[in-house]
Every structure is written in C-alpha cells, then in structure tokens.
Length: 247
Image 1 (cartoon, rainbow, N blue to C red):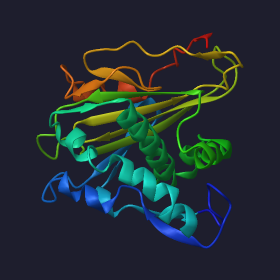
Image 2 (cartoon, rainbow, N blue to C red):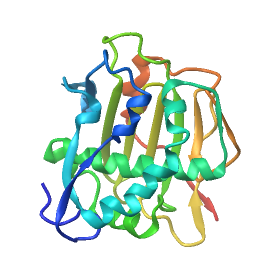
Image 3 (cartoon, rainbow, N blue to C red):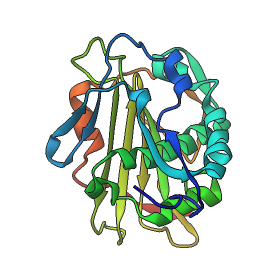
C-alpha cells in the first residue's frame, strides 16, 4: 500500500471506502454478496465479501474529506437509480459528475487488485484527477446497461482495469470497467492527444452511450441490455479502436 497519498503525496493516510456506504440503499444486502475482478484471458477472481466493505488506505484526510467527498455528493441523487435500473435522465452536468466519480472509483479499486494489475494506471493519471477533478481530454467514457443480476450466479459488482501496450496512436493506454447492478461505466485512457485534436467519440448504441465528454441527454434505462456473457468481451477488447479528429 502507498505510504503517501496517491493523489497529492500528503499525509496522514486514512481509510477510504471504495464504494460509498450510502449505496446500501441501492443494493440488496441479503444476496449477491460477491464481486469479480476480471483478468486477461477471460479468467476472474471471486471475492466472497460484501462489496461495500472494501476499504483502502492510500489517500490523505484532506483528499478523502475534501474533493473526493464532493465527487460522491455529485452523484448521490441519481446513482442509486442507475444501479437499480429506475427511470431517470442524465444531462451534461450529471454525465460529468458520473465520469469523474467513475474515474475516482476505478482508481481506488486498483488498490484492491494485485500489484501487477494496479500498475496498469500511471501515477500521472492520479495526479491529473487531483488537479482537474474530472477525466482528461485523453479519456473517453461510456455508460452501459445490464439487467439487474437475478441471483448469485452473476456478480453484483464486477470490475477490471486492463492495460495495453503501444497503440495505433502510440504510447500506453488502459481501459477501466465498473459494473454495479444495472450500471456499467467505462473509462478509456488513450495516449496523450496532440494539441488541436480530440478523441473521436464512440458510436451511440442501444446498450451503450457516450458519457465523457458529455453529449446529449441520456435517458435511463437504455433501450437494450448487454448480455452478461458479453461482459468479458466488453471489458477486455483485444485492442482499443481509438481515433483522433481536429478539436
């Protein structure tokens, strides 16, 4: 574990719940008390513990109780509806809040993973979130819909961060995927985009919508669900199909 804050380098370190305790209003506490960490090659590790119990001691008290808490408050009024598949509409402000919260949560989940998985995300991406409080211009985000798990045969919480070597754009990239209930969020990190250019957004699909940078309103739930058997293909694509366009 880190000896100084992974975001700002400060001390003392405090324990941070990876998923906030207030999410208990959206999760059934009696069943589906495990989560998966998906691995390269389609395997997974099963964690038989309530997802809301995960804590990491890698952030300082200033970050924990300050801007990180503000990111939590920014999604608190709509995140339970996304997880439960209840109707809502996400405007640009809500999409920005969700993208920032998802990135922060994926970064925290890295410290529940094995060290070789944790090393996928460079320290500079932690520092950039601390400075900007949102994803960078070298990131894309999208929101997907899955049916709520019917029983313990499917995980309630499913997470992965997969690193890639040199891409077609040059440099190192990664993709992080977090599924909670009906909600699937992805943050895709491309190599740094040249000045005057931006990443080409993903195509909007019935089961997936671009979320970062925000575009039009997203009506939830989406009209189609991602089948559970496609989760590995979604979270572990063989390559990242990323392009740039003039900004």
